Image (tube, rainbow, N blue to C red; front, side, top):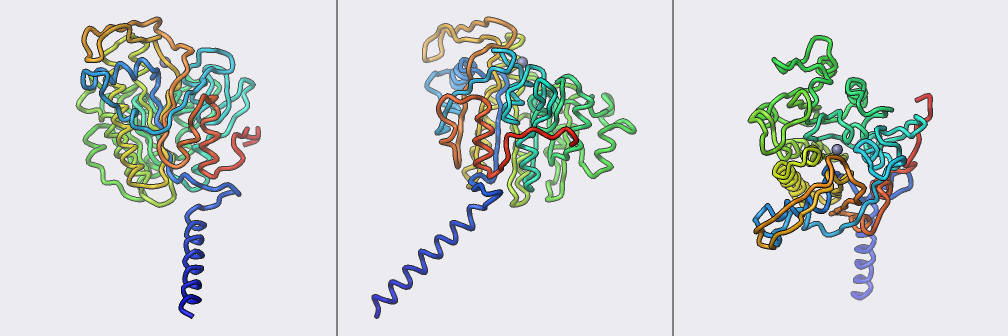
Amino acid sequence: MNNQRGKVWKYLLIAFLLLGFVVQSTVVHGAERLVKNVIFLVGDGMGFNQITAARLSQEGSAYSRLHLDTMPYTGLSLNFSQNNLVTDSAAAATALATGFRTDNGRLATLPDGTKVASLMLRAKEQGMRIGIVTTAKVVDATPAAFLVNADLRSLDKQIAADMLQVEPDVLLGGGGDAFGVNPFTREPKKGSLLAQALDEGYTYVYDRDGLLDLEITADLRLIGLFMGGGMSFEVTRFPSEPALTEMTTRALELVAQDDQGFFLLVEGARIDTAGHTNSVDEMIEDLLVFDQAVGLALDFAKEHPGTLVLVTADHETGGFAVTSGTPEGERVNYGWLSTGHTAAMVPIYAFGPGAEQFTGTLQITEIPLRLAQLMGIGNFPAVIPAHE
Ligand SMILES: [Zn+2]
């Protein structure tokens, strides 16, 4: 009898555990949702030698460890674009955002102009919060491909208008000019895109204090535009500009306000800019602050199960290499091959549920495809029918 009762309890316990499992793994469109939150960090222009130089610089030793180095799963991304071995940020961001290769210069559009769907916007349709943090203009190629479709990456004002149409929960970075910020007062010009956004309920901040002092509430939608164009290098950052880490912290607080999950893009954009001007110190400091943002993302993920942290680069910039030196950081020399991008493959780092999916040598387009599966988002990649 006691034995019987023990069995019943055992079955009840098993049933209870199974029920818990089913409830935990929400089913969306037939696909299991393993990942609730996505923090996607892109180091623009971040090649292997850039990472090597930053690691060496951090503690003056090749033995020091970056936050990146603690991520358990790593892969390689074959990042060439449809019309060029050497991708630009627009085509690479299109691949990462939509799962389609395209020609350089295009944002979430195919070479024939067909618009393609962004995984971030799909996530929003599922009720997830979405946001962008970048040290570039928020309308720059990398963030833009996640939110808008455009034939040309340089159409800043059109991109800004389209970006507000899709109503991201948070946009932090440079690019005030494209939204109609008065460069002297930092306030929105009358009738500007930004003025309209404020009418529609957005909160706007234009400096570091404004961002840090802001009370973040569940219904807050936030635009922070801290420069007219791109933001400064970390080494020459104005006191009025927040660091990438500060923007990341506040954006994470905002998108984590409810239990619906989120997709946050964080771009370290100035690694690329420093590569274009062959500026070693600027490149290293911007990579180190990007790595600190990765550290914040990892801390968040450890406290919030169901969070996947993915880090990759769109391309390498400058043909940069560490050419000599000791592991203790003495007599270190660097060289640059160009002031443009190169065709070098780039790293992928992953932490969290499904992280093991991002190993091996992947086509760049595989990254969002695997991500979509983990997020339980079906019908992806997808073209957008012409009438939409
Ligand atoms: Zn570039």
